[in-house]
Image (cartoon, rainbow, N blue to C red):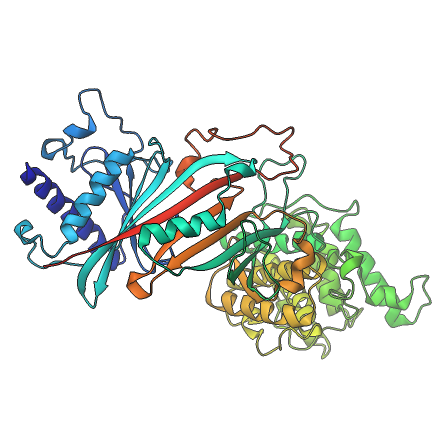
Length: 597
């Protein structure tokens, strides 16, 4: 009777070992089949474990689940799955939702895994036993306890396995009825009885959502932007206890640019023209956006040139001198609540003023050529001697500097040259906008920001780095306007963002983290329900530590629950509103088995 189980254990070990070795080589596969009904995936460290709430192990883990589009027939019951039903050439469908196995099948797999990892099972004839990563199996909650995960984690002494820690996670569904909530003292008592311990320690965790972007009218895609705080503390007094202000807290920030309600949305729109030009420079095809103003680009540029001529000729115009020097650009149209943070720059040079005119009005390549033709002729004839910032490396700035000496090189306004000229002055202008903000608020030095404004890289890469600057500004503005952050919190946050973006590509889904005192943001959550509330009850130390975890969460804690029946305890609410939060009640227990010779 035992022989088929031994064969199945060996086959599972060989399958997991192959997946593990491929993962160590840096070539892990999404899903690998095991037998007729199961597929396995290796999740590498930092790869987004679905078990973060219930298990804090480090390193790789195996996840096993049912094949997404495979259904057992009546003739192929789980008890009949043996050597004959092994399928070695199965390719699972990509993008399928996680599908859970029955609890019985999951426990079979955990049993086989334990057998293969037991060093006393020498008759399996594993020549060079390897300590494999922990194995977790998705369960369909079909048992009376509504089990959604079972797991097995090797206990080690050096490179030798000394035992296995078994984990069971259950979730009965959602409810607003607090009578379904456990009593903390009962949980502690049950833990002591289960693990024969006289002393237990408790640790609390709460997550509060401080800011979340809601879906805009006339839009389909919901923004994933949100700001939330994770709080941990020792010694829990009761279920749903409010975290003490002495607790340790981490602010988590994930913001996507482009929300029309953002105070810097107009600056975002201005920035969006840069990738369009960069793409045109790369492919030769430019998708010109709709003009934002009624006047043509040629008319606006001619008006700018006339104003400059009048100023140089000393004519008294009806336009205030400051208004000529300070062209109102989209970047200046920011919310009044952040005027002190992002002031309208009053030192726009000629090239920057030109960018402001052209980026809102250019509708075609021909417009671009006509505008630059007007400018170059005015420079050649000495009609204008515009002021420009020092240090600019744009082609237009070089021509202007040459015009001061009456000797301009001849350039051909054909091909990609006009697009490059406009892109260069746009980059120069926006770099100064962002840099002046960060330096003006004493959040960074020019030297520390040099990476973002360097002209030693290709124009496409320069655009990419300016987009990073904007994302950091969005974070800065949100924390200033919405959370009322002061310099003491903004400075370390911006330093963290700058460091990340010096080492990584633009990623608006990245979660930036900031250690913070709960008192700084307490007023934003003190009257709210937590999104997650959890208590860890533990006893023992080191590898002999055992835990009981009891958790409430407003979202399903298990991703494969989304496709299953969640309505076991679910209460109905009108329009999705309720004075009491709807919580999913989840519990995780563990037990240990130690191998003896």
